Image 1 (tube, protein in one colour):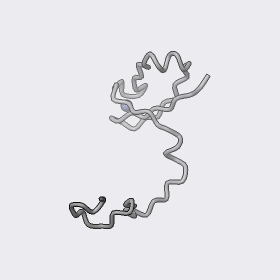
Image 2 (tube, rainbow, N blue to C red):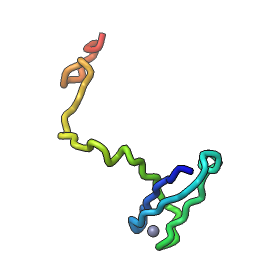
Image 3 (cartoon, rainbow, N blue to C red):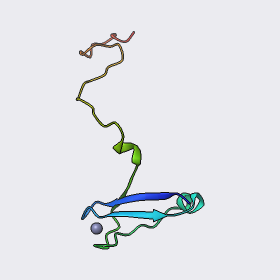
Image 4 (cartoon, rainbow, N blue to C red):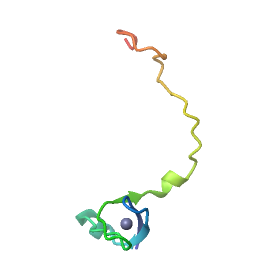
Length: 72
Ligand SMILES: [Zn+2]
């Protein structure tokens, strides 16, 4: 059974929710165990991997300026 990790937006409490994929698709009703808020967001583990972005703006061949007709 997969574990879904949620974080409370109100207080930052982390929760680990065990649910089947079928349960997840139906929609999990996650409530913060600490403050009771329902404002929770799912944490994806991929957020934690390789997060060393240096704020570079990667544009796809169009250059830094937005000119009409630039992209053909
Ligand atoms: Zn909370």
